[in-house]
Image 1 (spheres, rainbow, N blue to C red):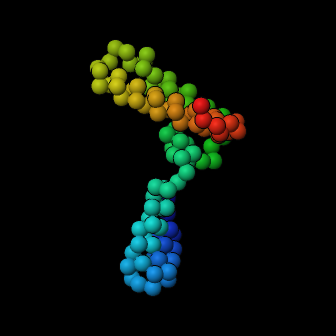
Image 2: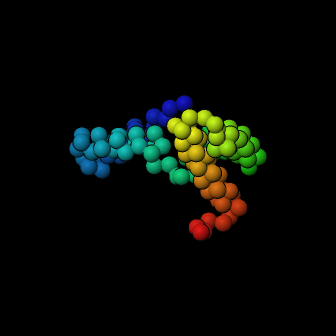
Image 3: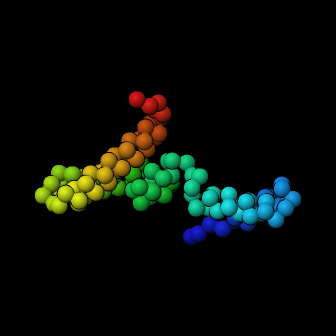
Length: 113
């Protein structure tokens, strides 16, 4: 479902704060950025890598990771064309990075190496 209320609230707030119609347009643009998820925290984007929502449980994340990494693992496409191998390696790297960030966040270790 597409969110719409950020645009409306941004328009109203921009108009009221700047007291000009251009403020409404600026507010609507900022509201659109919120609605589209451009300003969403990274952890929500990490869930989207696995095709899950932010309310996903540990088990669902682990299951999605295992399913996708087995599909895109570079060893699995070793005999494929070089372009497909490069795409699989990039996707596997993306999956591993997102899974590591989610695991680090859920375990409480938010320090970087």
